Image (tube, rainbow, N blue to C red; front, side, top):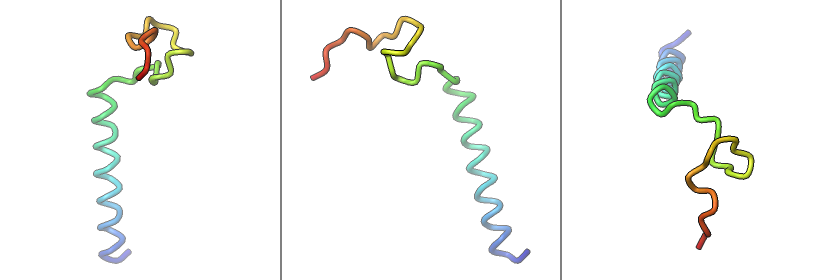
Length: 50
């Protein structure tokens, strides 16, 4: 492995850590924004779109 390989590996590692951190902070909501298939009471449901 050369220096460029280590740089790419470090970037991928940092992006992975940031992705895990984002999921942990924002929670893994099952709704996903598609209120027609949301089993919970979606707050956006029933609001007319402009």
